[in-house]
Length: 476
Ligand code: GLU
Image (cartoon, rainbow, N blue to C red; front, side, top):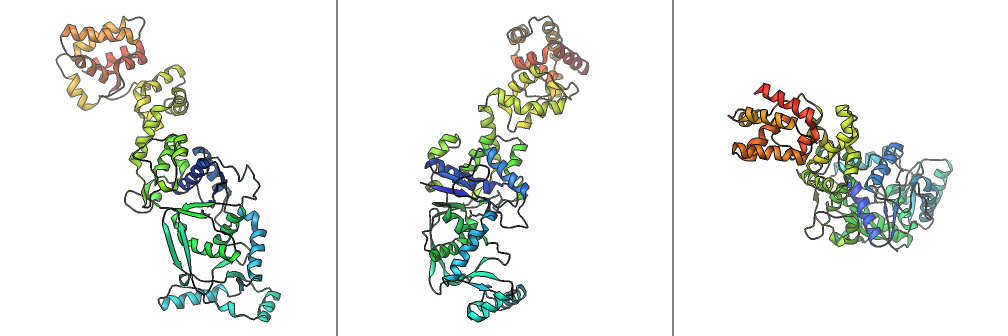
């Protein structure tokens, strides 16, 4: 049974990188009919917040990444908040001390700082010098009895190397000499990330650890801990990082980084999900994947070895594609509050028609506001180029006058009736249909481009069309 986890630290919102890690784990679990576990790594007491925790839930929920075990849903391997597992971590740290695989360190922060500075002066990488390894039983007893602050350090095996057989990166070898006796339990009794992660992954029976490759350098320490406990390590898969278009690591500078911001900006969750899936994974040259297809096709073999580049143009393109596919009712629900806010209108039937005719033109949901402005406001300006091209022609005045007259007599005022008016006039004047349509479009919308003219005329309605033609004629 595949068991994977997403283990965010609640120190900020769910950003794109985290969402991708969550998604790949979720897809892997769903593909293999396994379990997707959410574990909140909240041991950094200063930086962890309830708001961030909520933001992570919100981001995952928006993307539809449901967890089988974790906060709010429970499970047999809880608790799923790391801070509720401190007794487990402490017990296991003690076990390593008893077995001689870890030891108490009483060095003060000041002493460690001096040692670090000395190492830096020698141009050496700062490593703990093993001072407290050499303490005698009596010395340790005395310090413990007097309550001297202490940490627990892992006793690094003297020789050897830690080998990470990574599913994406291949074999990565870390010589033990680049490591040191790292802290596993801090002086406040809280575990360090590497230690808690190993405990929890093991006890939660995690089979595959899929995470960002910023954690690759932690993996040798984790493997050494698995070895010390005599536990088999999980399979590791480190996914390459995400860069901005400028090839720098994706950050706030590149725009919104939190997933939920994308919902506010007007992206659809399914477009976002598709886009995030493609950030570092692919299947042939397919661009659009349904959720079911992603589950069916996702594999770690399909994950790229090189960094992914976040391309907003591509995301926008995808969002436009997805908007085209959604049902008119859903699009309307998304647009309605924006239109009410922008134009103070409450004419539902009218708004529905407007959204319907603009459906295929939206890239982002809020595009509905500028694109539909002329449907709601009469005081628009005429496109300057359009005025030259379509109003200042010998026929323009006559065309608009005739249209005004004939359209005013139509009943019912619908596309079927409207179309012959335009076509008839073109035939009478022996001109191309465009010669009739262009000045009318400019008169009714101020723009050179709109949805099909007969739709626009019908939606605006007889009265508005009449008023706008009068206004345009006065302008010409
Ligand atoms: N809490 C760690 C993070 O958010 C988890 C890393 C891991 O998946 O092991 O980066």
